[in-house]
Image (cartoon, helix red, strand yellow):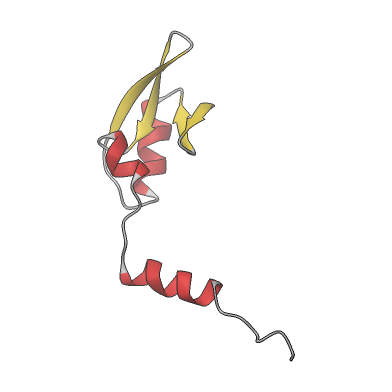
Length: 74
């Protein structure tokens, strides 16, 4: 179960959920945050590695495709 999100990243109630989320994004491990007095688990070994997007050729290619324009018909 997702407790909340921090910087757009889900904070889970179990380690298993956090590790599964991390694995699906090519990350390993987990770290913890305290939310409303409860320990929550976030995928990735530390928050900076999760919150900072990794730039790869695939990321650049996706960004290029999504920002292309049809020319507007003029």
